[in-house]
Amino acid sequence: MSTDAEYYFNTKTGEVEEGKPSSWTHRMGPYATREEAAHALERAEQRNETWDGQDAKQPGAFDDEDD
Image (cartoon, rainbow, N blue to C red; front, side):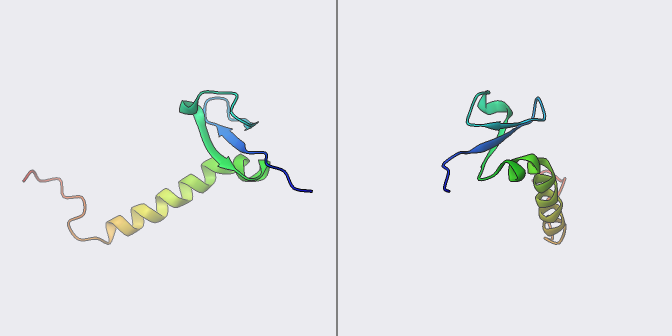
């Protein structure tokens, strides 16, 4: 059975929502499943850590000195 439902994680309430009942300012998604949406913050945190690690390896990527 196929469904076209989209799920979002509401960062204000911490709840998973089907469709777009709340403001875009509080939504992460869309996700294909309720389970994916429920883990949205964890996944974002993991990606941020990965990207921060990659940035740290780039020489001069975030110099605090003014040009």
